[in-house]
Length: 158
Image (cartoon, rainbow, N blue to C red; front, top):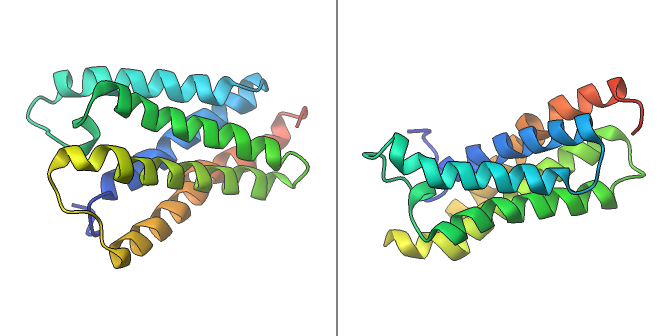
């Protein structure tokens, strides 16, 4: 659908969107752990309700054991928490854009390692992994990190 090689093109889009929501929540609350909590809640809601809302959509995001699907989004949240903390002294641009890119990549790699074996599809090739990794990192930085970086000055407790 996206014209990207698979498997993983859907996850390459979902990860940056989840990172965006988590980083915006962090800007609002300014407490450590809020990104992890946001990701855990989003991952749980998506994993539980996606198949009920779209029963005909047997996508990779709805395949595999429920705990692993939730854990995938928790991995994204943990990565965001760690990178935002590690980059705390950096300018807001690398802080939020690099964090969103890293979180999105961690989400994609976890899906490849833990959930794709349940799809019955062949493993991702190196060439496709490089393309999807680059798309995921770019989308993470631009889609997930750009708006929080732009809004960060409005929240002066950075």
